[in-house]
Amino acid sequence: MPRYLSTEQVDRLIAACDGDAGARRRDRAIVLLLVRLGLRAGDVAQLRLTDVEWQTGSLRVYGKSRYEVRLPLPQDVGDAIAAYLECRPSTRRNDVLFLRTIAPCRPFRRGDGISSVVKRIMKRGDIVPPVKGAHALRHTAETEMLRHGVPLDKIGLVLRHRGIDTTAYYAKADVALLKQVAQPWPEVL
Image (cartoon, rainbow, N blue to C red; front, side):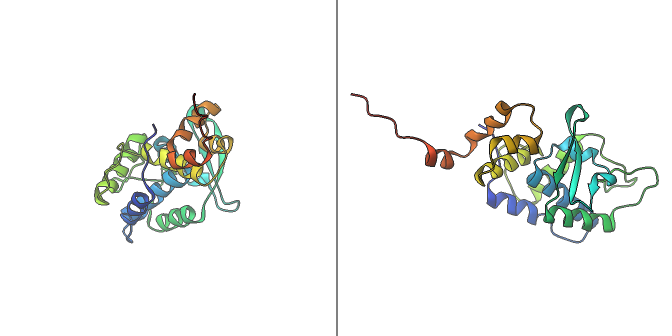
């Protein structure tokens, strides 16, 4: 079974990023990208300033195999990115969106740095996740989309799955929803 956070845990996770400090603003933007769009930690680490397309309200993401997709940028995610950009350290050599907060402020090399940020935020929010790191938020995003009635093929497009089988794996996650649609088993004589 996929492992995901409850709605209450997601709220606590986002609340753990409250504050005006640059690190808190960065953390909020990272968490919202992961939990609202289901991005992989590596996707977030690779985002460039030019990938946020403010005019169209979209985000350009290059996933595995450098496959490009444009995703809608939810208002709260866009607001969090804009707030972070107001205090983001400036660097001449880099157009990577998210930077480490310890000088010298360099970009994250890979997704494991983003997962480390998420682990620290979970600890700060006193959240005991079913699985540690950023991937729990990808599972959470998938489960939330499913709960809100988004069809599996659309979820697969957002998550950039290569096949419907991968997306269908997450259909098992919402047992309450499955109970609503399950047909009664005929009695055996």
